[in-house]
Amino acid sequence: MKKLVCIGGGEIPRYKDGVLLPYETKEIDEEIVRLSNKSNPNLLFISIASSNPDEYFKGIKNVFSKLGCNVSHLDINKSYDEIKDSILNTDIIYVGGGNTKHLMEVLKDKKIDELLIEAYNKGIVCSGLSAGSYCWFKCNYDLIEGMNVINAINCVHYDVKDNVAKNKLYDVVRNKNLVAYALDNQVALKIIDDKISVIKSNKDKNAYKITFTDNKIVEEKM
Image 1 (cartoon, rainbow, N blue to C red):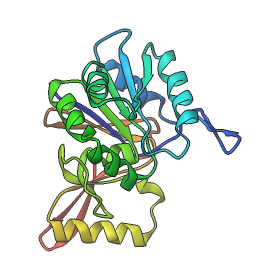
Image 2 (cartoon, helix red, strand yellow):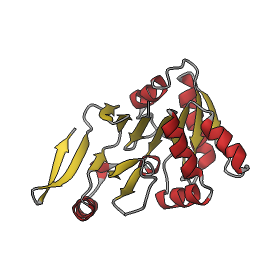
Image 3 (spheres, helix red, strand yellow):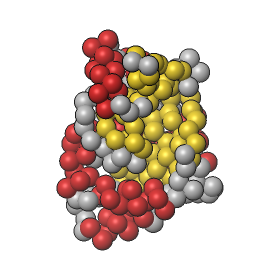
Image 4 (cartoon, rainbow, N blue to C red):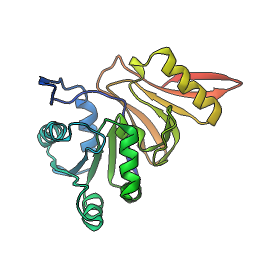
């Protein structure tokens, strides 16, 4: 069974510029752990996209350790065989947010993208937030190519996008003739094999399916 959770955004408790951020993805994180079907799963955190990976990892480790996980951090400076062993012998993979372009460049350069796809196909619980959500899809609205595990367009932080960004997304949907999934902060898509559902850590936030149908953009709340 293939399991993927893609999160539109939301903070975990960690220090950023000297400020402790709130916890905004609790229910989503709990579901990620539950999907492993283990009481003490191993979780591998990938912080490639982040500009402050050490603080990010501290936050992730704190959150997921309290949920029963044994949390480790992928060291991309290790050998390919060691990276492969880390990725294919864990229970959960969580790709953190940050710079999407940089994330994809490193994943492709080190062939980590191929290992992540293999992990997904193997049934390891795969997940990610923001850039870590984008990477599993065909592309984002900036046309940064992801791993195409899901043949669709992804848009995160949808609730804080301005009209310029939304129109850019609509143009990509129209020109690519692909479905887009737009996710507010604190909302995630749960994709089990081909079945898609929505997880929320905030009941007032939403996920949307966006298509180009009958020569017009259609936005459907999921």
